[in-house]
Length: 326
Figure (cartoon, one colour):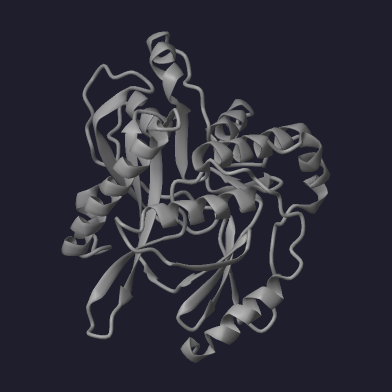
């Protein structure tokens, strides 16, 4: 495990943005920035910390952890669905295929927690699903729930919708949506089985999909963005879950839910002024991200403390693939 002092030293050198010359317009999301070059996309995963659809702070090495985790899981799930990854020229950067992203996020839930629990405890449906009465917080579902949401603009909240609404609103074609649902559940089962081998529970996760149009006009469904990372997923410790659940205690977490809890305790759920996170909390958060990376991948985390050389490495990639640029 990385020395805590290395993380502290990086507090003033977090990677919050990347500016590249000669690659056109930069597109910025909550955590990732990207440049589109012909049929490819350069994706920079920053150290920015988001919660409740707001950028809260920055966390040392968070971008590297997420980038490495996404690469790991893209490689592990290629047998289920093709993905957009082409190269990783720096620990914070991916070069991917440019895909036509679907306008919905697909959330698969194995347990009643998070926003699903908040909706349920308020007497509301969960993405159009009416759950049975008498369920407890952190209870496992008999079968995983698939709960889509629309993608909101920066600073706005995503909207939970039902699977039927995805089709009825014309967001995704019915046949394609059926394939999306099938692949999302296959990915979730694979991720759950793999996590269990590491004494972890994949509680819920978010998937994003897109399509690539083939030369014959047909479309191929592609897994994009990130997969099974700490930002897109909840993980609990498996061997303590049952006892803690039976005693009405919070499960042991290995994800960023503790950040949301920390913010909620300070009265923040997305609206109003941002709370200030202490340096100690930022270091604690970084350590948790790194611990999760090592537990889930079985790899030792080797920190990248500089962004130097990224431009040259990206240019080298496109020099090799220049015939494919437009």
